Image (cartoon, rainbow, N blue to C red; front, side, top):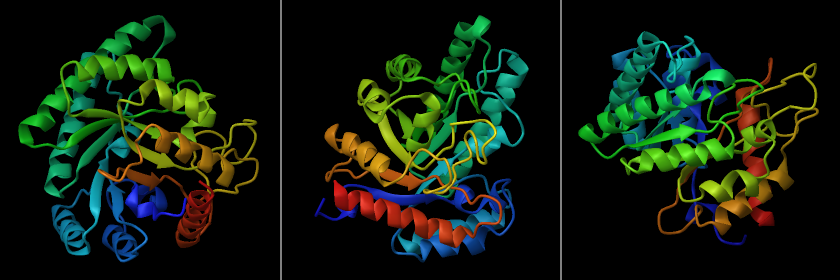
Length: 303
């Protein structure tokens, strides 16, 4: 592709994956945010909870003054404390919804344009009950967000039987789920992640085409799935080029080509496409971010 990548997408990175020390809502948040917002390669950033209100206020100022688009990823709010939004225990489900509503408040506070979450674990014997619990919770979130403004609620599709073991899940479930929520709420969409496709055992065409009308956000990254004994096996989001991993420039080219073909990547309303790549072990976050940029630049040049 000879045209600028910025004509078709807002390029971002996930702050809490690039810098895992901030995953729990504290740590060197402002220092690491500044590294991203002062890098002109990025015109988008995805953040998660920031527990200290003064730090949130400072972060908001960074976002405003740097002219960067912000999205909010609530996944750490659930994963770090073991909450499940489709919990069949009603008290557990309500607790998960409550923390996500707090996250929606935070997201509006910092000026985010979207709020992402993930579905929870399930048992095959009660899968339909879990699905209905997820529908109920998601409609609550969509309604809550809609009362406060126009921020979009976005479900990220994860693996269903390897690592996170989320009910959404395979593309067939994602399609059914999106259809159900969109009947009532137009502020809902799906997030597809290149990192998760090997875990789902789906090609970009298989994972994207059935849900093309519902995709509003995308992540790009890598995974190791060949053998459980390998380093970074599962949903660990290692760097491109990691030993025994699945995704590199060719796979990213294919992913971007499908997103371009369906009109997701477009010049009228360029969507956010973010790196979801995490340093492994003692790898330097700055080096891993540079790795990701090189891979995206090369993939875009090959389109």
